Image 1 (cartoon, chains in turn brown, purple):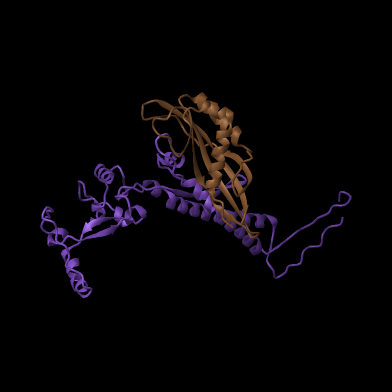
Image 2: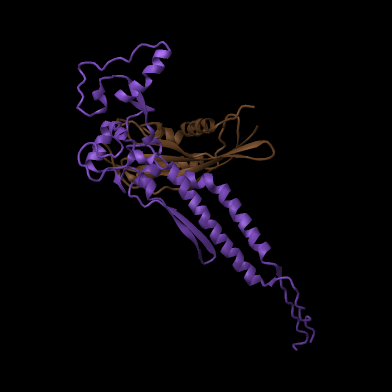
Length: 140
Length: 247
């Protein structure tokens, strides 16, 4: 049987974020993987995979315990924190539809310490986000 | 008064709960210290190193005249023609590998970006563009790499790049209250930007993946260490005393 990889988890995460009406109404710059292009409007969301170790068990199942960083970037801290709260609400215990995998849980497990930064145009921007763990299972 | 009869001394080693507890703690501390080293080593493997050499798998260089001469008989046996000559437009300094007059290129493996440290060694006695000791590494520097070497931005322990990787440290485990803590730290100032990413560049996490990937190995070692400590403790002596009627 074909193994379903972290690509399916990534698609499910982005689908979940896009499906949230609250997030959709706030973000002007969209959702980007890794880093957003320079000319993108604020606020926007970035996501990236941190780690996704595979864990095979003796019953023929494969568990992927993937961790994802999801950040909100905005020009003021309140906007960034509000967007981060919307993201947390959308993803915490979300019933993600991952192709070929059963989601055991999706939880926010940490908040990486990030401070204000200056972008290429000299604007002060705020990066607020969290680390989410998505634990999935699939039969091999 | 009814009290337990005094235990008869036996040949087997007898320990108390406190001693077993102490043995378990010591085994756990030693195991977690080893675990921290495992995580640190994995983090070092994952830590990004400055890419100062030309991209791809290698870089073309001129073969030396001696290399060409050594292949002459083989080429003749295989029915191949002579090596092409160096174009007239190419000027070579006397004594340089190109001065032999042959212009056949071979690929220098670009091993410098994949963790071979001798390629990144800096010659401390030379200043200027080519301060790397290894001549092929000096030739393979990218434009960015030449700037890094010249400005000494990436100079770390006489090597180009590798500061982030070199500074990852495992602090041995210690008992703090009821917790046993071991730490793996990356004290480099820009480590958090690599770990979490910024507005300008994506994250290249190395600490958290190292922890996640080492988790099962560390836990397994911890379990077997504790099991071994219990087994080595011998039999546990249990003393039961009963006081009846306040006597």
